[in-house]
Image (cartoon, rainbow, N blue to C red; front, side, top):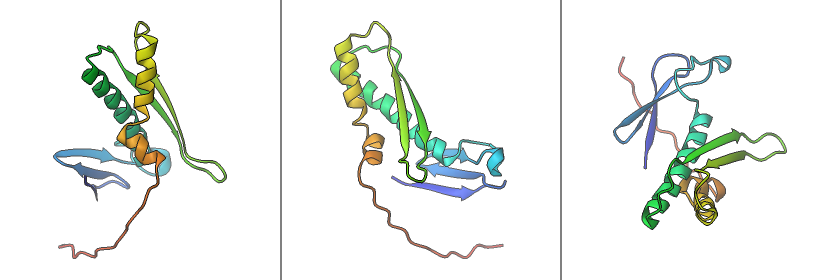
Length: 135
């Protein structure tokens, strides 16, 4: 899995390439950007919300459950001195979905790949590559 961010004009605007998809990432105006796309921390919340929803929906499909409309909100609070990073997830299901299915989906939600990556040990390997840019 690979994502590449390239500056795309503007102060902090970048185009991110993932497979055959492009996303615009920028900072809000109050952070010096032009607000032409979500900022990187918002994309982290997007990743967790969408992965959680998709994981639950895939599980339900494998079980043959019609769960109807599924919605996941994620509120992200970055770590501050003395306080950990916080993710507040709200999962919404139709009110007629049986409680045993809701509980099973809640358990499965925590097994989505993004949740597991954020909850587990993370390692970074960094290196610098210098390139000559033609004028």
